[in-house]
Image 1 (cartoon, rainbow, N blue to C red):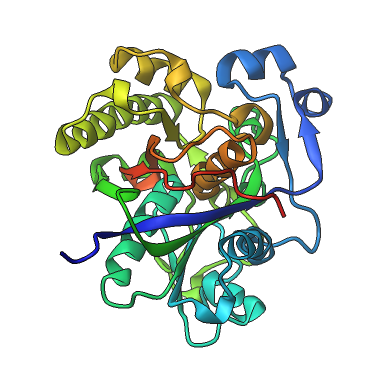
Image 2 (cartoon, one colour):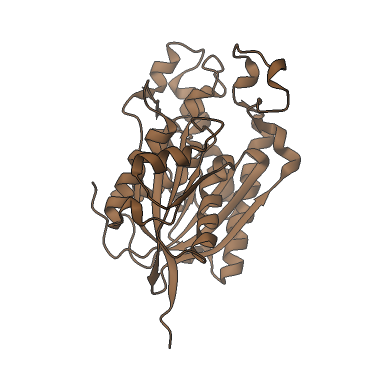
Length: 337
């Protein structure tokens, strides 16, 4: 009988800027308080990239940790898939800059634009590519969200932080690995969460000076309602497709957007908020980086054992959403580099 193989997460890595901004620091500049921010979001602090720190450099930092832990050299990779909403350039893709810095040889490299669901989309895309090219694949979520928010808008800027997370995917034997997945979009709500710009107008019609269109805009209530529904739908359907119950899942690792969203989704799923792993209190909403950042936090805290089932679930602008069921395969915690 042929050996059963699945695509597995071989290692994780993450990076956040060293500059930490607390709610108290924001309260000195904005009409807000630590109490208000915590009660409405669950966020206590966020990490903000400084001059010289870019989406590409963040991705490279996280990737090097993941590659070293996995025992994979960059020139062994078949592909680099980078999920981001804050690319360093309109073109080329930021993944190409990461490829250049890592010296990834003959690997392919490209970006995925699916906002806060980007890492989930990238994981599923990578799995498809590995069916044709079995070499290890590097999947990254990296965003510098603080670069695109209006720091005078207290309703939006307090929500976001910067960071990057990465995983190395490899073919492996046994039952551990990536399971059922769901990728979807509710495009009727695309305007509720947006950053305008792009090429809707010819360059000659655009102005050089930044405008309100350059910043991230969010309509809070419709986005909140969408997110709660999306989590419920994705988790429920993944369990149905897998023939499992929620009790069999150790943790749901969601996009870290807002504690109130997670709390409401937990009630819809008839479970407690402790079923979800959250690190939003320290890193805030890091968009495509949030799920791999949370996963690496679990690894570093020795919270996972071989055989544990996890559900990654994302939701974001588009309105994209999706999830993937993962059976963890590492029998011992990975060494911290």
